[in-house]
Image (cartoon, rainbow, N blue to C red; front, side, top):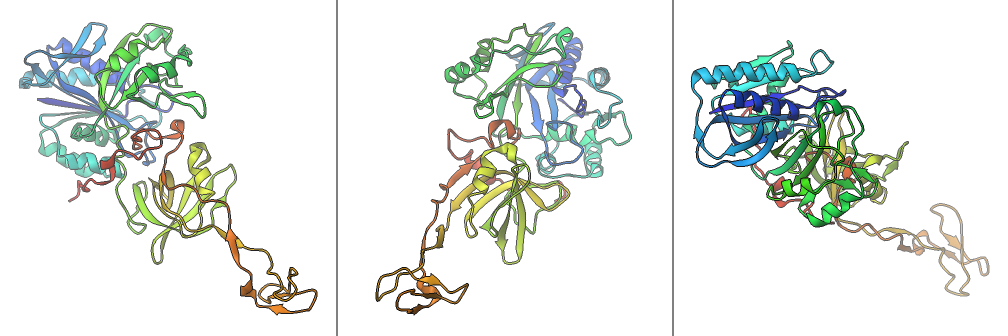
Length: 457
């Protein structure tokens, strides 16, 4: 088979790599090649400093399909069918696919814009999954990826000397596709690109009630629609679900105010938490993500802008600063209520500095919230004593009886927050963030139980 991966075709100003893949599908169709399996939308390490927007790469597999295919999209030329099995293309067809796909990538990329570094990878067999796990969990070097591709006989096309897009394109092909979610993307006709989208926000809650398998369609707290982009890209809207069966029906029930020019159903790693692994403070590295279990080691500090910072300790002498950003809403609200000694699991990513930018918290156990009680009463006359100063005890104003400092007891303060899982508000959640199992529920159980696989052994 011919596995095709593309990456880094967009920029912060616009463009869309998923749309580029639809153009690659059109080019493959003109060559008489079929889509085998589902097209893949693969999100990679969200902490790398040179990512463009969602840091998503695309992959698809081509050959000559056998048997009956199922419809997974529609292009201007007609329906897109995906076949479960098929025979590989010939060597001549593969070379033609490389050139046609690269022409489509170059024609539809944001070429010349800062940060855009388009790349195409065509490989006869899927690279090892270790490549994907390395690329989704941390920043990796380009050299070992290029060596791996050469050993597989891959055809590689890039436009700039940095060649950074090779890593994402190859990692998308290497994604094993386990525990996937699905996203249907509908696209606008080119004359409408850049114009306001007209999606009735009141229809989205009804759609969610009718199709409860959908997730991240809107943010009730901020009233922000999440199914429609807020950029001048070609996408009209996208619907996400854990299973693909009813996504097409749900999309047709959404009043979008304009016809779709094309649509495609993607298998994705969104909502899987694949970028997070169990880690320790000592093991955290720049531009990587981790989930650290430990104890709150400081009184939370309220920062300018509503952000909250506290320290988390997992071993004696090992602690890391945790930062809950105000736009996540639920996380700084919880962080303000934490007390030293509370036990929790915090996950998030680091930049160049050793600060864990929180993506979620599981509060496991809390310590009693106590504060100093009122001045003790005199055991002789029952009057309330007066303090003699810090550490000096108390004295009765009537019979001058002195009491030691420890005679002052402690009383319960405000009740602690409830143990459980705390996620950012939906509009501040990463594409890869593990999705909750239900309202207030814990994330999918497997997301922290994977063995760590490494490209470097």
